[in-house]
Length: 456
Ligand code: SF4
Image 1 (cartoon, protein in one colour):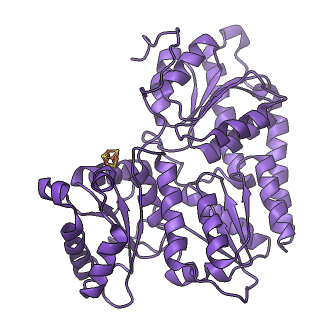
Image 2 (image 1 turned 90 degrees about the horizontal axis):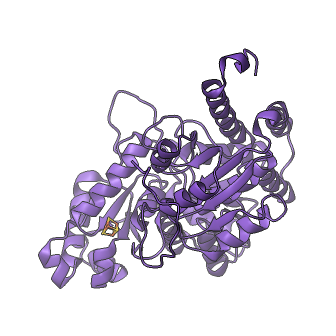
Image 3 (image 1 turned 180 degrees about the vertical axis):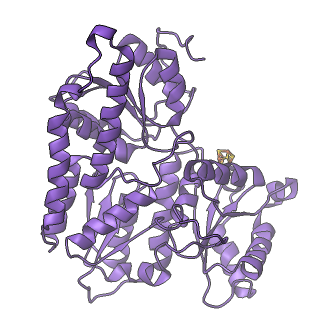
């Protein structure tokens, strides 16, 4: 289907073809689901909310709950305040969440609806019951991407919940970034294994990978509690995992509550996980045998499979924080990134990836705010052996007859990504197994009879 993608590349500034991103509210909705008993609310028309919910449902294979202000022509002209007030009344009367997290859409942003004023009025009118909370984030989709929306909503959590406290406790905050529920669980496990007490927020584990219990639960067990979010201002340190998804919230926490922060790469692959663990140790944690053994197992597999990985040319795309770490990981595996892109804008991505690849792959094409059409053209001019990215790459994989390891968001045609982590040493093992097995499958498929080996 994409076999007609031309090799000749033209400079484009106002056109994206097959974008490598989606719109801000999806990220905001996902982040909000990481608050315990929270109902995300889309302040816009029904179509936006339906798209965001269905896209998340297809990726997580779980029902994704969200309400909408259901804009029609009237709201589009006169503003959506009455719709939001009516929606809040219905939500608290019928669905009983503890928190409603409102995000805006292109339409409500263009109208200029002032959410804090609308919510304040709803409070004065008694629409919001005592003890219930409404938070919000502005998420206009004509800037940024779903990652920006995620970052904005996490920042909104700090804005609404974190209270300044002079006397700091021994706890730390960890903002895991836009990663999967099993990743958030794995980050929590690693922090606990190092002997530290942490507030991890947001935390979608348990919410979007809820077990089948035979009954519908509107609010599955999981998510960071309101109490924990309120106490984030008492922590002595915040670790922001991922500059794009987590740093804005950490910055606000420092300004608002005086909690210093450190920004780290998403802890994916050996070196990024090492830096995460080292930071945990600097923060008073202990290196345990479990962490050492997990690391050793990952290194062992890397050594064992080196002959199948070394020199393999690879194309990477996806969200900036995981892709930065992935570029470093594949380099450590001996592979050569030829093209590394993200759909999210930000020169910081290009600087960081080019810095990582400076010695090993200085010729790599690295670009933020890029699309899959661009990536495909680069591959046509400089072929690769493997694609690593989300489901949308399957069309390129078919057109170029290339193997594809599904990684990142969204994955709409395979399972496993919501069950097994890719972060930490254990996550690195899962990812490495998939990379190696994909290459070996291809080798078995392509080898002539006389070279088909039983043992690889
Ligand atoms: S891009 Fe804007 S209008 Fe389109 S679905 Fe996203 S929020 Fe709605």
